[in-house]
Image (cartoon, rainbow over all chains, first blue to last red; front, side, top):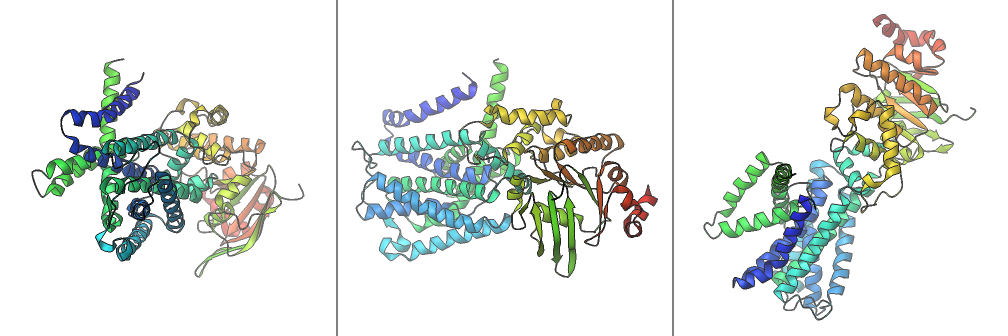
Length: 317
Length: 252
């Protein structure tokens, strides 16, 4: 078995053991924090697909996270508890929104693309603020959670954790298969040189739109999980600063790497959690970490990890 | 030989008050090497972009292989067998030399959205890429990165990328630009060998190479084709000499 496979397997076993481990340590209340990491790992992975692989720098990505959260949150507040219904409605709402926003935004490039995705996200932010029926600027609190088949209820912390973990694992598997596939190559090609890719016969607009929609839908799934986790969705989840947070996670973890979103989400949330115990100015210290990563490790934590495995491989042939 | 492969009629393009392409008529026949020459600023680059579908024309028509392709964009034209190269090398820096060619092979194929199977498992695709690699004389560089290639090797790969999908016509935009004598010779041989595969519209400054390679030559000056014919006919064309060849031949 290769070093990489062993590492992936070890990570999976460790992730599966988290609820049991926290219980053994009498620290069950940390399980919701672990779930938070998994949920944001999914969201950051979706942005990494768009930004890291596709080269589409969007400052509006959290719009899809927020839409997913509101879609599921509104259904819950109306008494619809079936997870199947939540999944179908969330996917449909987010996919349609991503299709429309993508079809318009992707006609622009560079700074204009950043600004137009930002503008769409802010429009949805103000829309969420103005809908009094579903909480308006105070946000929407839900008292019940999604019900899965076999009597599983996302109200149970461990069930939520394992559900989120399963979805993250699925997303990572699909991403790992996508990278060396035809579509993965096409996306790399259009990130490198869009004009060339198009001149060779690649329908670049269609490819970008498909990636935009897939990334959006994945962020929507993370949003739907988050409303179950927090029991709450607020317009602030649609605010552009939340897109910025996701971007920081991607840069910290490793732009254009399979594990970048996971490592970045874990690192940023852990930093935030640990530092905020000591100082109110945790953002200041997080900034230094980000600066160090950008200057000294362009591939982020995933790059550092990959170098570590290379060394391991060479020392033990 | 009666219907030309590429038939351009009265093509126009202006940028504000500047006329880039002014009523261009141009025919390229199957399997011919047709050179397009002209002084700097004659509008060669605009014309290539119009023919490849990157730049929309104001008026006029482009017919290719009997069909009107005037309204088609670049990737649609490439899929019909009309592919261009670039004057400034545009290669994919995240991919190895072999993977660059493999991507060029897959780019015109169906299954654009196949996202599960590793492309490296697709033997027919890589057979074609390796065959091209050998033809370009780059077999020993298969796994190199693009920035590890010499200028001449990059230019060869630039041309090779256009051939990957077995096009009917390639537009080569100054393939000899910036090359040393030896590199220039092997590029000339490569272009000459293309006659077996497809037609070539060769945009080139190097008049010597052009007259050696081309079956026919067209001269573009200020956005207009002022002469078109066999190399001998064009060499003796008074207008062409006055506008371009006179200077160019003096310079040699």
